[in-house]
Length: 265
Image 1 (tube, rainbow, N blue to C red):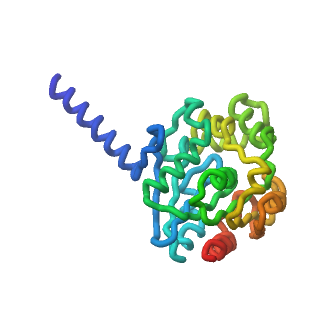
Image 2 (cartoon, rainbow, N blue to C red):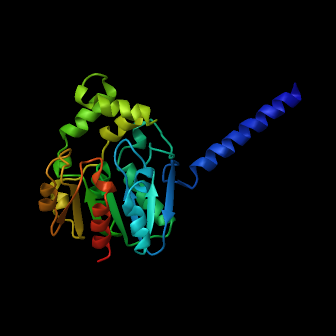
Image 3 (cartoon, helix red, strand yellow):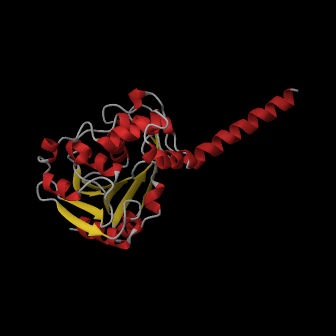
């Protein structure tokens, strides 16, 4: 009986080690939350922020990550808290007060990277906007698949997604997205928290941004409003249109080319 118990303990410990190694490398953030990240390339640092119902692997399926590395950048990707191989706390406190952005800033500091660029797509663009107001280390920024509509506290996209995740059947038009989230293994409690406490940036704050910004949008992407409104809100911002809808534009060669050319300046 004793030997059987010892064997069970050994198997459990081996499982824990294996599970942890599958998530490595991990960074312990400001509140103890463990964040999975990855880096490739050498040179000027750039961090890529993924969108909603996905994780850092979405960048590995896009041409831009490797093209940035080939162009002389050190590329950092991460699974934002609650996603992928990072910890998935359910408590509201884990997502309040720009927690996701605090993770990004702490990770870059942990890696010894300063004066960095940031590329955010979809919800990642919303995070990028907030990061521009929080971290003076950001040198240039790219915001993809987004208009300025997210600056509205009651933005219907945020509210509708939150309600769809917390009140089943409340928004039939979003049911396919909820079903996809469940099928892909995303945590729907976390997804609701991410909408509930999505970082806020006002139009007045955007008007104070002084770093170069490129807004990139698919020519068939109408999911999040007119990208020109975001360009108009940020002094000196430029717009690049690339082929594709919201789901496909970031994976196109044209998206990669626009981002690399802008960040190499």
